Length: 482
Ligand SMILES: Cc1ncc(COP(=O)(O)O)c(C=O)c1O
Image 1 (cartoon, rainbow, N blue to C red):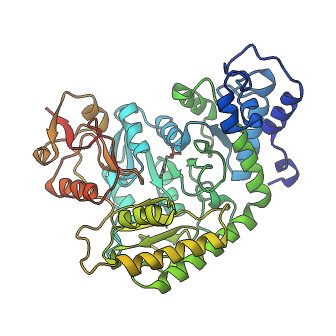
Image 2: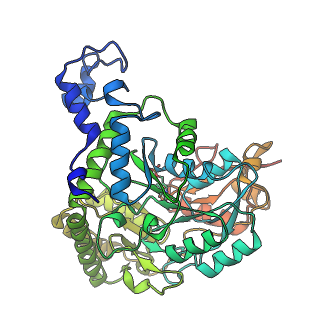
Image 3: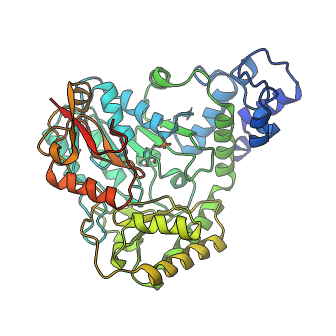
């Protein structure tokens, strides 16, 4: 990486130049640098609204980058060790979907673990590709899905030799990493493309002694949430390509769904964050690791909680662990993760990333301070003192592997009827239902609804998980195939 070059932020620099010229706007956005909407200026500040501009020659165009956005994408590709990088303004959802749609045509098979984010299965509804699920093992003590083992992938590839691509989520929300290099080599040996959902892995490109990143492992494409550990504005993401993938075709795919009015606040935040990571990422992520390790030790010293880390590594289902993650198993205290999540917010004014049935995840990043970590640890100790329960919650596991009966696209667009949850057992689901976060579908279109799955949904609801994806916003009814 050329550090001198990385000191530039071409979009940000072009915006600064543009501001100095005091151009009179007879274009959109209609708030005209905020003058037409004083309350917006009050909320966001003058500088922010004055940079909320539309594409124009000096600022390039995200759909067809030829100048400053093109340069920003080249610098991003260099910083991430990729052949090409796309700046994305529709979140990592759009990056994951573009990655799948660029590689899979209707009816083609894609191999993936079932515990992927909903964006991946949504992409199958849109493009008509057919999923082949490899079932990851579940950690017996903490109930979370583990990584994909090469031997399981090999079996899936042998059974589905015509599959065109494999998608892996790495690291998982909880920090679990698969053996990405071996998996990538295996996938390539069989002529398939390796796609990685690295929503939780931006830091792997800059920190030291962290699990291998997708581009280094030789993957073909990767979706990166810069807005998570990379520090950019919410909704800004990256899509990386490698190994001679046709970036011009990928751009066409992105433009099928991408806005024609991309926000320069998002684009410039990607530009500035890439520069920051390239120049200072190593030190920043070393601090994040120290804070997460410190928090892990302190939380484990409370008792009852299990803040897990590198000890989970077994070189098979947990090939590596991302120690920047602070994932904590809470059921040892008789509390679900969602209960602890709610208590932290309601009683202690602490907002964590998510709580599910068995775990919580506190997101530690370059913006944290040790005194905030102390506050979290103290709150968790207090919760144990006041709320620890004898009786253990009954359900563990973050998802149940369902039986796929028809493809997601076919099921989603079929004739449907709505049934009360309990009545839906035995039917084929025609929509998504998931706890959000983490957004891993409990059921996706085309999957058989079982009693075990309905019990899980009802339990999650009772415990306060936000259930999303169903046409019925209360998630009391499910759409099933007629
Ligand atoms: C694994 C994974 N992939 C993709 C996404 C989608 O990211 P975004 O919210 O930026 O659209 C998420 C969001 O949490 C995620 O966890």
